[in-house]
Length: 201
Image (tube, rainbow, N blue to C red; front, top):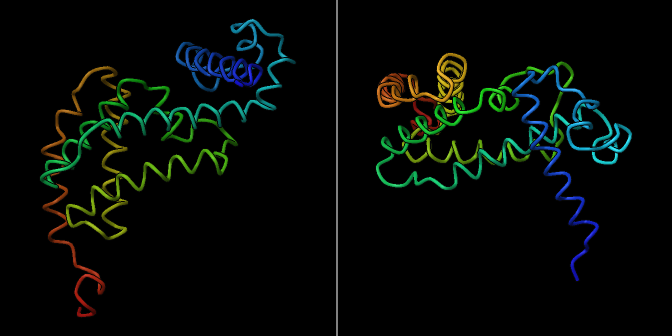
């Protein structure tokens, strides 16, 4: 038998998260308040503590929900085939996704909230996304941590520009092909590590 109480709780939690995103987009992440959120979902503030014991716990739920959305979006797309073209598609998609929702981008990729650190459960979702990105880079022959770090910085920088300066548009997303070309050209000229040269320098 379906546990109706658990089902109702899950439904209410989903409503609270949806409304929290809406309030954050209206007022800003930092201005999100438990009092305002409780009123928006028809609860008294003490009742909201049944779902979140603190404001930081609410931010953790938003962080996790944002990464679930990102993972779903990414897994719906095809990054097989030519490795270079896969990198271009991946970069373009990530920049576009970030630009579609600035507040969500802030929650996931910028340290906007003082004192907030994602819980291990929420951080595991971020690591899952990281592994997907790393596998796409690995397929293109980029296996060094430096490659992953710099490509991550490339995505972050372009996404930040897209989200801040052309939200909902594609000004920076459309440069994905050129950005990947520059990145790969630089990677080819970078000195290889001993692991890549069989121990030779």
